[in-house]
Length: 230
Image (cartoon, rainbow, N blue to C red; front, side, top):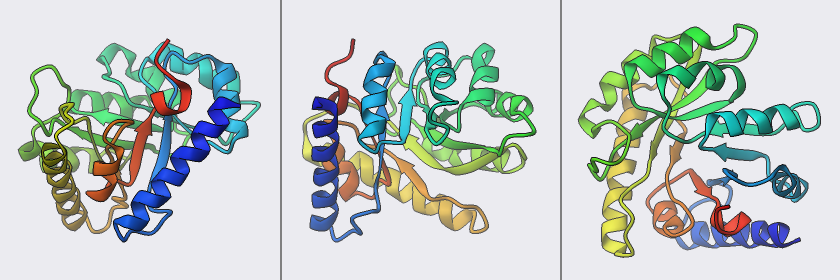
């Protein structure tokens, strides 16, 4: 019941933030980050209306997808963790979205390994917007080169950008990072007018408000739904 109540509260918060920012109340999608959480928790979230789930670990994600695929085929699965090239096949075969593309090699392998009977894999380019050495993601200056590579891979569908800015409680620094991401997102849309560039995945439990105000279309929330990580 707690997960159900948490989801209701988060949806209320998202609507409120959107209204305060002058945005349509349905302009932000909620991705439930379910890494380390048992399938019982995901089932509870599903029964509360949640359909999109994010996993950071390939094997754990695949096990959950296999568990739910017959029971709830409308679940949408996003891979949101760093990906080693020897694990690309599982992401290509099982997931609907790959949010952390940051290398040409990864993009090419995902394209080659995507089953032909499945629709193209939706992908986001991960940007290292805070220029942190410990974080994955490409430099903003390399975004268009990566976009052009993905555009020419028929089994991938570029949908936008993803970022995990440096953690801070300074509202001005949060806004600076998120605004920079939104500027890149608009640049990508304008550069590829024939592509469906509609997703800017940024904002987590602690910085969701700033992210939405700066144009996020998808927030990745784990702790506020499921409680602290197992």
